[in-house]
Image (cartoon, rainbow, N blue to C red; front, side, top):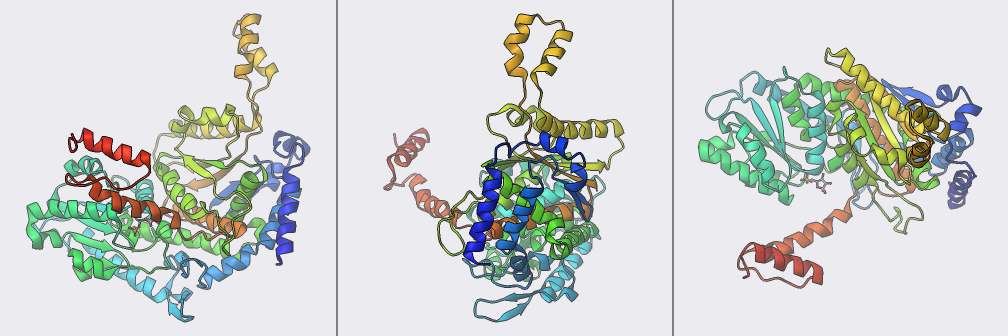
Length: 553
Ligand code: F6P
């Protein structure tokens, strides 16, 4: 597609989004009573309902035209073919290979123009992870004191924490084989919270870091290694260590035995890595079979993404909805509302997945982007969210598009609670759409015996504008297979947005400067440290911290 075709597609979309009433939703339902039928789709086990957005037939055509002009599907095929689609880091992007069978034959292009096998290596690593997991669960691999391992702690941050933490939280139950715990924050209060719950003699320690250089992870790994060593001695401590990393030299230097290192390649991005060795804590905590079901679920969504036509392709439709809201309507916040407490870490996982991928201001060719890119994403499970930030979604000055995730069948026997949960999720989305008009509020207040004066005074506060967009995803149940589908759906949505916005969704250069500056500030916080040249605010803050620490009196 030529730049002119791209520009024409953007212009067409923007002109539709600027029509008077382009954000109206209720009127679309009046004009098109079968709107739900036309604007919901199913992919695998997931139903996606876009009818409560202001996308109409014309807007959908324009969005699909944009996808074609921006060549999203050819870009998808290039990713699957192992091309170097992460162009600023010159890397292939092959998380799909992690959940595909050996026979899928994925290959990664290398920067020198060569080609490397991916599928065989993935299958070999999975086989090693399975042997290890099953041996730990069977008590064949035991602790240094000869006891079975009962707890597993994953030390990692960002993608080496959020994905595995989210999945373990969703899948773990009382009968699961081990208790998985997650240590991420450099703040040792995090460790202090976890430590009393652990017995070093029964705890397996996974150090999860793609680079094995991340400062927070290495600081925590040293802390926990010391804790093990105190009770078990140096040799005993080594029997409790496992590393999940691409950096084998650094894992050996840290003292992790070579047969306890599970690797992966640089074509696995951190925020897409839960399916790789980084997911070992899920397998240990929730069981090998569930880990495989998780991968199979993601694979099912990959197959849908790779084969469904654009107009029925769930990840693409979800991405186009975001383009409509962000670029068309200028709504650059997005709420994630899973109505299932087991998904309480899902918004946190998506925060990294979406914001680290899509928080970009430069096109793949190096020019400044001419439109908004990644929205600010936040979320909480329902119904908790209703008692926290939903007020702003209903009556705040700017609409915030929201994704509701509803699960038809719970895994607990408390049917009344589940009905209450679903009724609330459905009601929130309906309230956002419907709003509340003056007549309705007046009638309710009259019936409640309010005086005409009171009614007039409170009326403006109690009216809701409505026409606030939301997307609903429904799953029949939440298990490893459907969770895999759900997470992969959002991964592919992110990919589509990267292509639609012509940005590299797989790098994260913006986080580097802060890391470098923290390295230079670190010595300034030592007792003998000297405050170096900074902006006056940073200098003032360091001086105050030092003073309150009693360092510079
Ligand atoms: O925050 C930056 C980042 O590089 C993420 O992309 C990554 O998930 C995280 O740090 C952890 O990196 P590593 O796995 O190398 O420790």
